[in-house]
Image (spheres, rainbow, N blue to C red):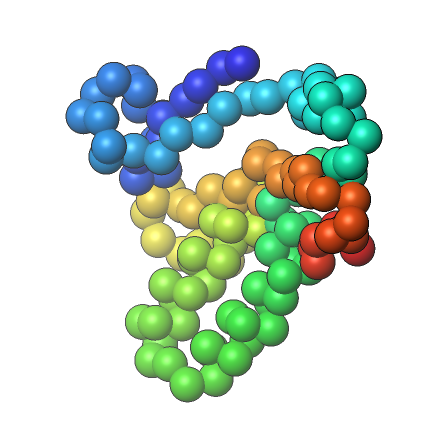
Length: 127
């Protein structure tokens, strides 16, 4: 597993100012699935799916649309940028600001997986 730290959309040393950066890891989802299923016959494993798919299935698109209906232009720009960072892929095509501040989409970079008791059924985004 490889662990990385991200602060203000830049990779930083994981030991630089602990607690001030988001941590993420590259994981072997196939191994996690195998281990979970081997550990118990009572679990079901769902995914992985991309962060973009996960948030989309949870309704992020509808939420952003609703928020955009009643906000200022500045708030709309912030919402659009934040939305792109969560569900977009690569550099934001709508960005008109400085290149060094271009929002980078993480929608396909991060994945989501769920391990649940079989009796609970599939979690909403995995149905």
